[in-house]
Image 1 (tube, one colour):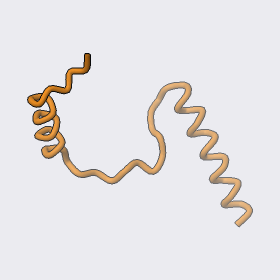
Image 2: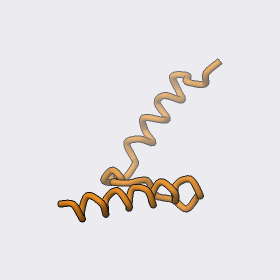
Image 3: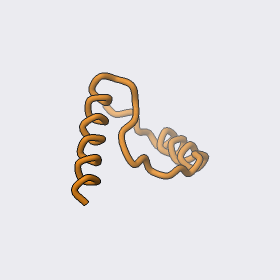
Length: 53
């Protein structure tokens, strides 16, 4: 049973309205092993395209 009652939906909408608008992240950020590995891979790909262009 989901907890999306009318009251909870209204609460979520109020909270969403109060959030500060921020630009979307251009890449994944973090400090976990998986994320660091992906960042390293993306950095390598970016470097390779920069070198060929």
